[in-house]
Image (cartoon, rainbow, N blue to C red; front, side):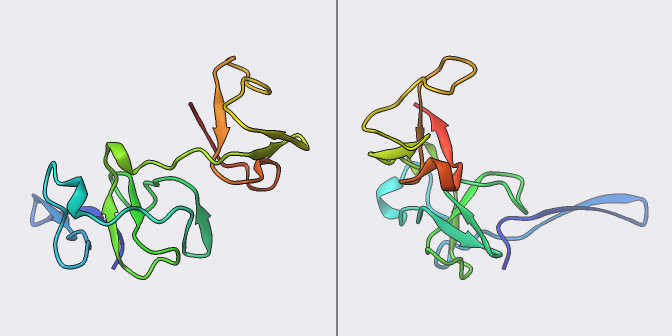
Length: 126
């Protein structure tokens, strides 16, 4: 089953909103119950692509897989679910132990989401 898909249909002139249910085991994680929900599995593979952070692919909201290889178990991302920086990481054939401004057009600190930014190009602002 694909992550929480929304499909807007026009049938007999009346709008109908069809939404598939999330798959977190058997039901969605309760609100404000982060400890009861399994953690996101970063990185994870979905349809032969590797994701290092939450994605909105095939969904209206950002989600993550609960398994390294997506097998239908996922959840909507919450504040604590976003991918963590990986240290040390390689950027420009140099090792970084902390966030860096190097290479940032906006001069903001950033970090890699994988051990080798040069290969994976996965990053986020610190």
